[in-house]
Each structure stands twice: as structure tokens, then as C-alpha cells.
Amino acid sequence: MKKRGSIPILIGLAMAALLPLTTAAQAKVEFTLGSWRADDVAQMTQLLAAFNQKYPNIVIKFDPTNPPDYNAALHLQLQSGIGPDLMYARSYDTGRALFKEGYFLDVSDLPGLKKQYSELARAPWTDEKGRSFAIPFAAVSHGVYYNKDIFAAQGLSVPTTWEGFLDVCQKLKDAGITPLANGLADQWDINEVVLMNIAPNFLGGPEGRLAYESGKTPFNDAKMVSLFQAMKDIAPYCPKGFEALTYNDENAIFANGKAAMYFDGSWTMASFKDLPFNWSVFAPPPPAGKKGYVTFHPDSGIAINPASKHIDAAKTFLEWLYSDEAAPIVASDVPTGFFPIAANAAPIPDVHANEFLQMTKSHPTDVRFVWPHLMTGNPSGYNLLQDNAIAVMTGKESPKQAADAVASGLAQWYKPIK
Image: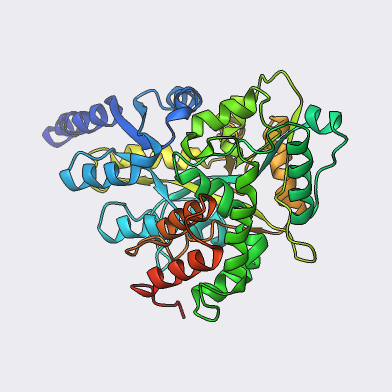
């Protein structure tokens, strides 16, 4: 009898012992998701709210940083032990560098990760051993925005060759219309949304890029010179005083109908949703006789800070993000102009977003030229292309001098991949 009587007591003690664990599991946790996308607060807050409805005890705040400052600011935060629990992770070498320093958690074993993301989709956020340091979140596309009303009024068609593109630019200029809205003041955008937008067409797409990366093609060959020549060729068609125009200035010039075209990425389209004219996008045309490509770039992954006190909750969010249940929510709430990478990605309703996607279906694609292997040395391939593109467009260097400067700078540190 005594033994039987002790059973309820033992059960009660066991339940009491488990109670703190149950309470802890249900306790409300709050943490941040760091990002470089300061323009996406409304949409990302909506996405995080949808997650919170499913998991009411996990509250995630979207906390972005000014885009040009993100890499340095994040690195400093992580070094100081005050980094966010979740954070946007750059693709390729920039993200790998943080993983090697121990600032990103290995998420290779997340349930369903390999089912929802192919090896190709995971590759930009994996290291040389195949370990995943972030889940793929979104890709972006690049192209040329154009004012359809101006084109119609001037009897212009979308050009299919680079030579035809320059001819359209000249006809617009002759008609007193500024052909291109792009400027130089913020520097990064002339690099990412113009030079790396057109680079695959001049350098030969993925195959051409690999030839540079492997050392088979020198970085100052005729194709690289032709890319800088293209940058020189468009300078006369940018707005007067384009050297001082910021990225926001450029957006406003196109949005106000003061320029007919605008090199930019898909991420900007949300700011053009209520324009008083018809607009669309086209793929940057290649030189005559060359294959045309579209830069479709794996832009952002989401990583977990290994120092976080909420790793389990962070993993719960990542698993939810690529779940079948979340797919239509992500498609609806992901910032306009960003494209989910998961295999179960749902259709995106935005008309212009689908115009960008259509370009990627009708053209072969490549990533931004320097991202996979040329970013992390000193001087970085990114800065070399950026600085020399600006020098060419402002008449301080010839295209050949620019290509030579890129080759000379990379020779200081870059070792061709095998």
C-alpha cells in the first residue's frame, strides 16, 4: 500500500520538476532581425507579424541599418557582443568571412532546408565544406526601367543591342529628353545597378566570369576594356551634373518623368507603384552578335548569431519561413522586387515584379561579377570596379587605364580559384 501510495506523490513531484521547463518554453521572447534594407520596414514588419500569429510567444523586431554602413556596422556589433539575434547575410565571400570568424551559426541541419533549397540555391550561403551559414531568403533582378509614354511619343522601340541602345539614347537627347537618370554621388549604385547590370553581356556571362576567376582570362583583357568603354559611352546621356546626383535624386528624376530610362534593380519598383505614366523594364541589351544576360543575384540570406540567447526561437522562425504554410505569406509580404528562392515559393502578385521575373526566364542569368570571389581582399574587386568606372565616366581615365587598374589591384592579393 505504501508503494502504491507513493506513485501519485512521485508523479506530482515529476510534474513539478517539469513545470519550470514548460513555463520557460512558453515564456515570451523578443529579439531583433538586422538588415541593410531600411526601405522595407513596413513589409517586413507585416511578415514578422504573420509569424507572431503562429508563434505568439516569439516577437521579432526588424531593425535595419543604412545599406552602405551595414557590413561595417554589423561586424563591429558582432565583435562587441551586441549583434542582433538574426541578421541578413550577404551571399558568397562576404558572408563566408563572417562565418569563418564564428559570427554565423551553422544551420546545415535545419529540418527541410535541403528539401526546400537546391544545392545551387544554397551555394551562395555555404562555405567550402558545404556548410550552410544562412538560409537563402531572396534574390533580386537588374534591368532598365523605361517610360513607355516617352518611348511611344518618340516612336522608339526597346533596343535589342547595345549599339541600338546608344542610338535610342542619342535620339532622346536630340529631342531634348534626358535619356538616363543615373548619377554618381552614392557610388555603390553606379557599380551595382549599372556596371554589374551590363557586365555579363560584355564579359561573357557565368562562363566568362569563371574564366577571370580561374586566371584563364586576365582582368584587363579586351572584354574588360569594352565594359569600361560602355560606361564611358553612357556618361553623355546622364543628367546634367550627374556627378552630384544621389540615388534618391535618380529615383526622383525617373519618377517625375524627367528621364526616359533608368538602370536599376528590382528592389526599387515599390517606389514607382503610383507613377503618373506607364513604365516597364527591359533587359540590358548586349553588343551586336553577343549573347544577352540578366543579372539575377542571390541577395539576402538570414543567419543566426551563435551568441544569441534565443537560438531555438530563431531556428523556429527560419523553419517557418521556408515552410509550405508560410510560402504564400512570404510571396505576399516579402518586400516588392525581392524574389523568394525556396522550391515551394508561391507566385508573386505584383505585375512589374513578374516583368522582372519574365526577363530571367527569357534570358540566361549571372550574378554580380565580383560577389563570388573578388570581394574580400584589399583592394577589393568591388571598389576597383566602382572607382574606375567613376573615373572613366568623369573623363579621368581611359577604359584601358581602368581595366589595367583593376588587374593591377587584384594582382596584389587575388589567387585564381582552381
